[in-house]
Length: 295
Image (cartoon, rainbow, N blue to C red; front, side, top):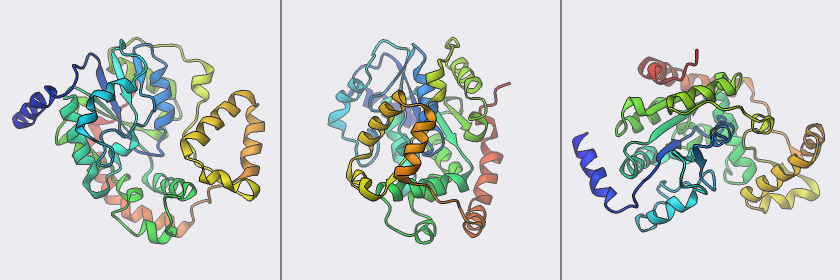
């Protein structure tokens, strides 16, 4: 750890002075991170990055000569915390999470790490179809999920991803939020996280509570051309439409224009359950003390 701290000190000489602490909501993707990010951003002392997922510290995006531009991604600079909610930080493919964790530590060794996890079978299935519907995944379900090195599987190996981050960060800097528990009581969990951050609780507006998870749509018929438009623009337009249309009308239009995600079949469920059974047991055996458990 001493060598890591020394490396961080050297690194600090190359980056702008950090006024606020950073919160990195590292994933996992398709586990409710968008909803949690929106709720955390509702606090006046937390500023969410714009865009929400800059993926700045990933292998593909990171450039040391662009570090000065990172702080400019935050609309407000005078808050106590700056929030980056890039789920790619725990994608895990090609050992990327460990190298990303190293970059985050070198940038801010005092950063707070929030990590949302979900039933790995459901998360993996959702991850595959999200990628397939955006065109990033071309393989069949069987072929993709049989590849243990792909992001759908690796991002669900939660105990490995936590281990990657604990190689650099201390345990008291990392909190794990279980999606299935969070979604039942989102306000309770958000309030608890505010307490962990030494922030006052806030009253959430109905608009903040109603915001949902990020979705990918596979448009059909005459609207299939939308599949060629970058997803971030489709999401922005979708959010605008949601603000103007009643919820039932929005759902009706979405179901009419886009293909639904297929339900997972029993054979795939069994296959994935066996794959994740041991990793899930190790996660709870080794890191149960990191799980957020509001009273």
